[in-house]
Image 1 (spheres, rainbow, N blue to C red):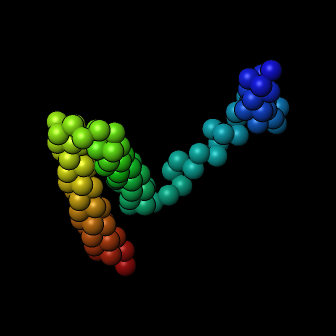
Image 2: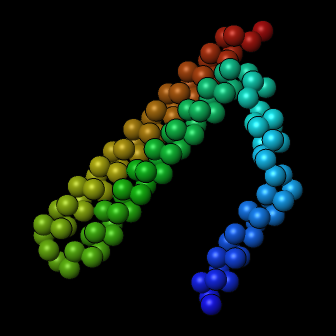
Length: 115
């Protein structure tokens, strides 16, 4: 009974959306493609990709911490966890450096191409 109620509550917003917009025509016309400047679009794509990579690096660090906490004193598992945490930190530093470089380049390109 609880599964039925839960699934109904989860599917209710989709049913309401389908009732107000049966074929999704408004979704296709309101995508906003072609309304932004190319530089803004490129900057948005770079921000999304680097944000996603930052989330992955953070999850790797958390996974290493979880493995360390659940290693039960096993030196092999602790070493594996340390390697995961180290790899996550290196990945996070690379992502932050890439963000800083991309921001610097895009800012200078924007300033150079606008009057």
